[in-house]
Amino acid sequence: MLIALKIIHFMSLAAGIGIGISSMILGIRAARSEGPAIGALRSAQGVLGRVAFGAIILLWITGIWMWQAYQGGATSPSFTAKILFVVLLTVLSLTMTVKGIIFARGGAPINPIFAKRMGMTMGLTGFLVVTMAVIAYT
Image 1 (cartoon, rainbow, N blue to C red):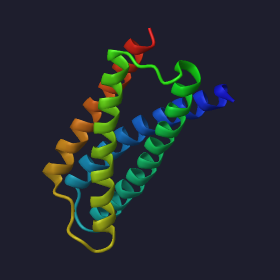
Image 2 (image 1 turned 90 degrees about the vertical axis):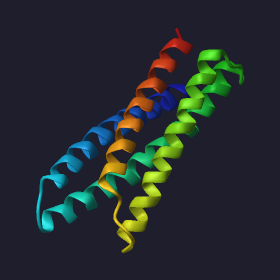
Image 3 (image 1 turned 60 degrees about the vertical axis):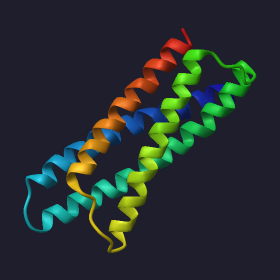
């Protein structure tokens, strides 16, 4: 069972990274596009964002399960730092997901500058999560 959890955990991580890169590319293309293409690109970003948030949920579920199974809930400073970055990444992802849902339902579009900054912050935060995970389990 723990092997299956690890596989799901790492596949969710890979999905999140891939979606982040894909979303960045779509955002760049949308900023350089005109007409109906912009809407299609932004719509695709929204779908990808919801899938990425689902991946984060799977990471939480599998991560907590494995943490209990392998460490019995014990922590270290590097593991605590990892979790703090995971919480930050989850909040950032939830913020973008909610904004995307509001836009998809006819609300205000997401400010491109805000989206770009959030994307960069989420990328850096994801990097820090992985870095702290490597340190915590080395």
